[in-house]
Image 1 (cartoon, rainbow, N blue to C red):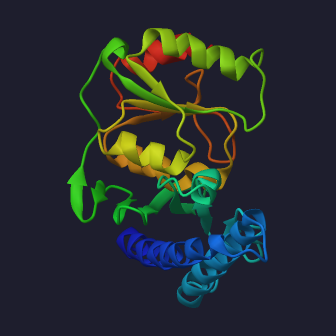
Image 2 (image 1 turned 90 degrees about the vertical axis):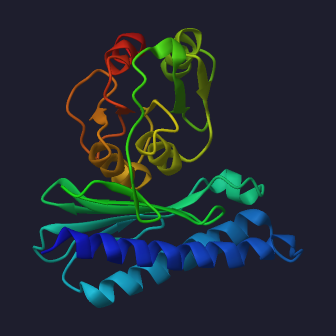
Length: 257
């Protein structure tokens, strides 16, 4: 199967999800329901529309989604990993840093994906061996090699304390890097590394749908993807470190240990 066709389908589906999120955002002023209920409905509406669109084209493929979507029947080598709304807290508060993320896996290897930012109408996409694009134009990771000059991003556990090892690691990098941000959308953080806007991103608390598409974006843009200790990355493991692939990746491994 042509990976470019899978990428194009992921792009189309991500735009469908993005339009639904945009429409639902206007309903947050409604008084009859809480924002939490509304965002749940928006999540489900987006995921269902994405699934129906993709399933119509690839009825034998398997699916995994954040909002309970889990279709593993059959023996297809392909699995679609869907996050209909990455950056939920940002979305609820009207902070424009959230995305739709759709990745395609073949026998455990990411082969196509799209991350769509509806607030900026930015579509990041990639297919195996074909590079990464932003709105159809090729993008590459940055060339910065020194962590002291790098902008990094991190995802921390939702509820944590100052004694959490993840927080301690965050503070160690904070002292060594130029800046470290915690933004609330892993998918857009990964896309930002791929686009050369950010040098690195890490987390030890992610779900497959948070990062499936984004790790391929980074790899195809020339970056490096490992676990935080430098071991091989697997999409079903919450441990992730991505960078532009320069020596600062190894600097981060030492600090995150």
